[in-house]
Length: 100
Ligand code: FES
Image 1 (tube, helix red, strand yellow):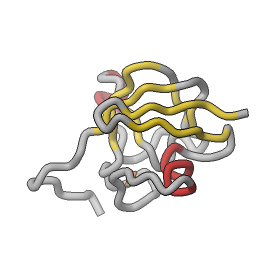
Image 2 (image 1 turned 90 degrees about the vertical axis):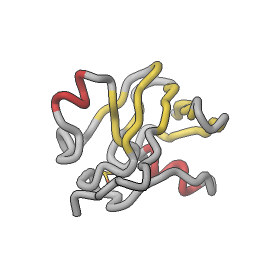
Image 3 (image 1 turned 135 degrees about the vertical axis):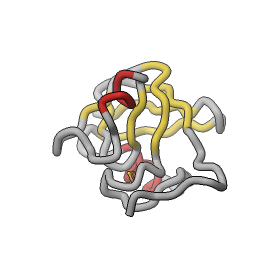
Image 4 (image 1 turned 30 degrees about the vertical axis):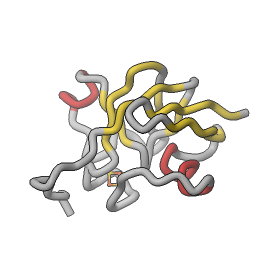
């Protein structure tokens, strides 16, 4: 089974298998998404959920604060969709400083 993830601000859609993260699926299909640590620590892959739901099999990631979750944000690298999703990437700006 797979889910469709649409990136609203880059006009991109791709499929994500139930056993892979959004970032892993994008890499597999040669779709470029912003990321850094690939481990839920740096926050470079953060996005806003417009539609759908995501799960974190290893628990709440370090870089995803409670306030981020309340604001409807998620991480691509450790997030596994549980439905079709529409997301909006928050591209790091020039002042972005990863936490690692
Ligand atoms: S790539 Fe670092 S938190 Fe996702």
